[in-house]
Amino acid sequence: MTSQFSVSGQTALITGASSGIGKVIAEQFAADGANVVICSRERDNVQPVADGITDAGGEALAVECDVTDREAVNAVVAATVETFGGVNTLVNNAGASFMADFEDISENGWKTIVDINLHGTYHCSQAAGAVMRERGGGSIVNIASVAGQQGSPYMSHYGASKAAVINLTKSLSFEWADDDVRVNGIAPGFVATPGVESQMGVTGENIDRTEVKRRIGVSEEIADIAQFLASPASSYIVGETITAQGVPRILESPEL
Image (cartoon, rainbow, N blue to C red):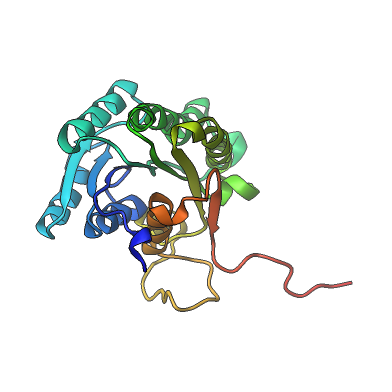
């Protein structure tokens, strides 16, 4: 039996869904029968994703939303409830980063990344979580990063913000367990998204999911974990952050 892995009938709100991991999560959830509300800072960027889902027979609503703006976040949650009757799953995927030496990161640059990655997660979790807690529970999936687990040279602002998201995941999962809201996270390593391709100069072409020995993944692999965490199959997983980074980096040739 595999029905416990399904998100059919759920309503999922997915932030940062105009491209990359968020877009693929939205498409996969919709293909499995979920209603999806997808947002990004520019509606023109996310509307084509919704149109593609609708054309494929799914249910999708595109909304413009800056996750650092609480009024905008409240509005997208209200639109979700008005259109689909509630919120079962929130995927906090909206994020940002850039590469720079720590000493070259301006205060504005630091605040911008922390505001989107951490404060945005706070806004969305509070707003959507209020609906879940009032209506019998739900699931929150926070997209963190291995950068938040093991340090992030030249992306210290990003790593610090994602470390905070991982800690928030654990803390919030404890606080909201009595309300039947499960909070978990995913810490991806390198994933061949358009953003990673532009920053790192890597490409997602010809990545073979059956190959075990690799250190770059595809968005579909993260979407699979997100669906698992949103489904009844993960009912006993609470407050965890699942690492998805391929082969671990260990000392391959020890020298005594």
